[in-house]
Length: 106
Length: 392
Image 1 (cartoon, rainbow over the protein chains, first blue to last red):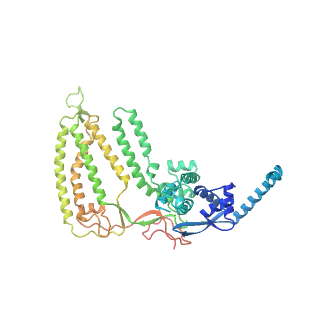
Image 2 (image 1 turned 30 degrees about the vertical axis):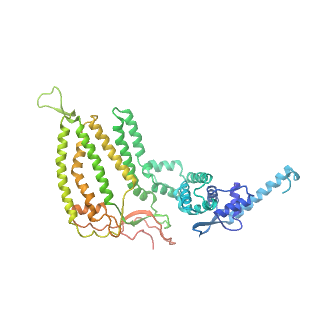
Image 3 (image 1 turned 135 degrees about the horizontal axis):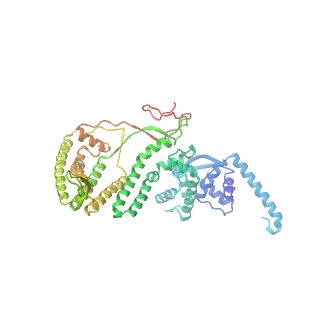
């Protein structure tokens, strides 16, 4: 799973969100590093959707614009959890190799 | 979201295929507007580039494999159902005639022939190019209907979802009378001028050439002989035929003037003026005729098409002019807004009676109706409406 896909999946963990809200949440989760454009966003949503990790969650019209909401599926939750565990294990191993104090504990 | 921003966004969203746009375009517009400045008039360069790349990625991922594509394009084989949306996009797309027809092959063949043969390239190329344009236009229209019936129509037992293609009754399409009359006059005028030029300047024509050395009974073969004054004689003949044409036109005018009652309303009909592709085809035909006439006038080819075109124009052009100038007496546009159809004008002129009512025709179209769970498409039915044929 790519980092961007992982971030999008995380952004949908606590509640369903629409496209722009996902972009903002990904920006917050990545600490301002990852800013998704509309094209990249839809590519990720398509791929996550066809993998069964997210699904449609209704739509509404706000301010004359159509908003479609997306939410995580149970498989998506499991995939996010397993990816998080994988990254945590990787970080632990990296810390052991590099030595804790040299990283300036964050 | 300003109007110009929406236009710009819709333009860049065309990178995505139509099937994607039907599902996501409105939603994507909202996201683009949210991501941009509030008063933005255009989509930014980086966003546009992102849309381009993502759109083409969707097109690339949705393409059928090469062997299936070749089978479809070259041999007309059907595609498996998962690619039906791709096929629908292909058939409904603007350039279907060029993609599927032989137009490109004809252009290439024309170029090859023009460069390999003697004589002016323009003489050979103009008819070939014209033919290619007309083939593309015709393939696009008729080919589409046949292609929908062959590739897109739902199979028996499929659920009737929005987006499924089924046979349904649609209003009968008709060509608008004013458009047809104006184009007819234009085409005949151009061809008439071209034919006159060919007849005036003709130097050689097709004639009988005696075979040297053969005694009585003399034997001849068909060959090229000097035209002499034949061109002028033929112009005189055409003028005489034009007089006949004018008499016909006067009769047509009397018939039209004699109709006082309004034509009946036609609820099951849709009158349209064909788009620019039809004008391009007509221009292509006019160019081909003109190129041939120029070749005949300058002696490059013998006089052959010129007289035929002159005869047709002499007889038909007066009638066409009358139709264009006086057809309005029947009402180009009825009070309700319905336009007069070319078929109606022809019927009135031929039968001096009101035309019969049009009935709906069966066509394969995309079903946009409300979704009823459990409704399933039946097989082809040799039945009358109601369409589409579905279970209750």
